[in-house]
Image 1 (cartoon, helix red, strand yellow):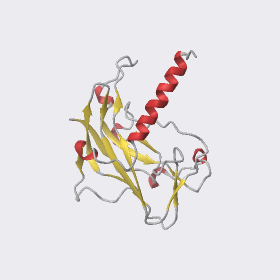
Image 2 (cartoon, helix red, strand yellow):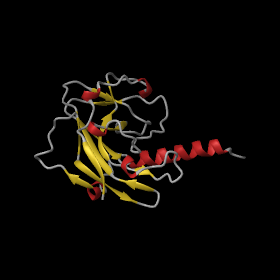
Image 3 (cartoon, helix red, strand yellow):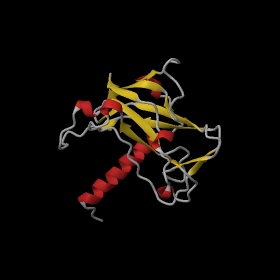
Length: 194
């Protein structure tokens, strides 16, 4: 069977997205400490609904990409159940987005979460007092033929992680009505080159 170039590209994007998701599981946090500056107790304040494990993350370079990982944690302090979007039926953790913040909010970014999900997955539920963590890839792939060309400054700067928390339980995560951003965003953190 012959596969067209568009289908090959689509399949490649799905495989890369699935690989990124496999790396984004909350259970695998061993490599996080290798490229993060832990937050001191003076700077680690539970002022944001989602808290990262460090204030600064350092990119490590490989032939095809730049890598850094954060562990982001949400603790349900609302006194009621909170629901979250899930990517597939095996997902125990939340879906999330990564965005530039502060003075970097309008700058171009190569750091983003790409999800390759199936439909019809019910949202997850987090009871009052329970916590939910996700291992978040803060890296980016190298694209030597990109137009416009990739620039080093597109990989670094100030960012936040937004958990995709739902206002109510839904039978299909695609139907999730998100809580206001102020109830599901992380503290600001910085991504730097080593």
